[in-house]
Length: 208
Image (cartoon, rainbow, N blue to C red; front, side, top):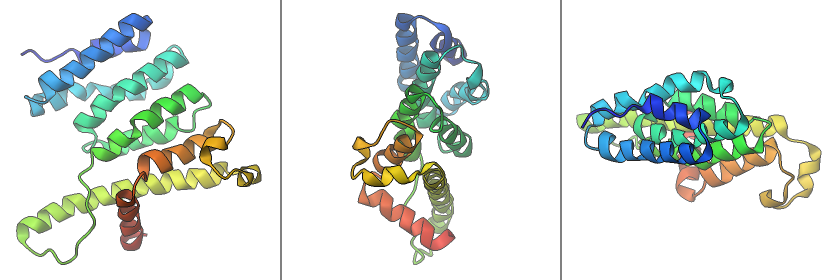
């Protein structure tokens, strides 16, 4: 099977009509299943084109097409999320502060995919076998990556906080805006369960 022309498909996502965009998004998904999965090395290279595309994100013609592009990014997250985590995390932090609710919602929708791409476990100092030590180094690096992303979002929560938000008991009741989006990002995507909360506590204990 020939490598898919991901760049051409992304261009359609960025500029096409609604029907064309949906077709291109399905083609990107198909490329992930039918090319990346059986050809991991070549598949990663094919999806690396997304790295250049995020650099020119602000040049996409309108909010709708920017949101379409963000939605397509989940396949890049699945493919090269771990290798280029810092690049993706920076993009997520940028988009979650965007004035458009469509952009914020689009990035919230895929943020959990980025976290899932990391191979992270709770640090265990008792593992001493050589093969386990090698695995532990890689996974501890990913624990730091995960923890730093959560910490960055918490810093933004503090930055955007206003006293008026204190009156709201539930996030769902808050007025639409960056602060609400940040709260949703943390509670529903970054720390959605006790497992991820424990990972963050472990990070905070070891590295803070």
